[in-house]
Image (cartoon, rainbow, N blue to C red; front, side):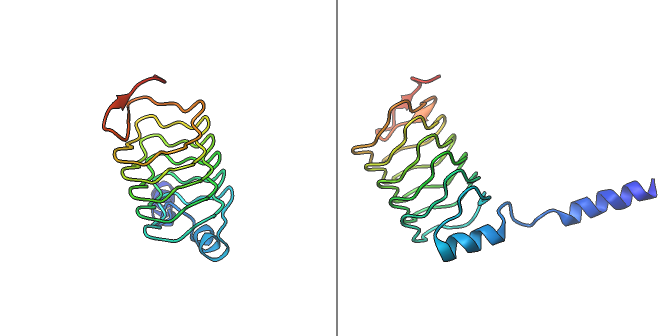
Length: 154
């Protein structure tokens, strides 16, 4: 019984204070790339990450509010619940990205590649989407730029 209490206590105190790995965050900020890494819930609002490679990464809940991520690579990334409000995602590669429940209000997605991405539950209110490559996007309970709800992929 005593050993079980100690193990439980150790597991509670050994859990990370952040969801993301600080080593990966440092790599992204220094090298502008973090392919296949964990940046979930990383606070990157207002950062300039133009052209960054975050493909195949765990970006669940990442905070990129008002960030410059023009031309960034998010292909096959898991971005559920990402905070992308006001972010400039122009010409970004987001093919097969999982953007479920992402906040994309007033984001700039002009020319972005969103082929076969999943935008179920995402909020695109006020987003600019000129020239988006949108073949196969899944919309289900997705709030579109004009405020309408798209359920075509449900």
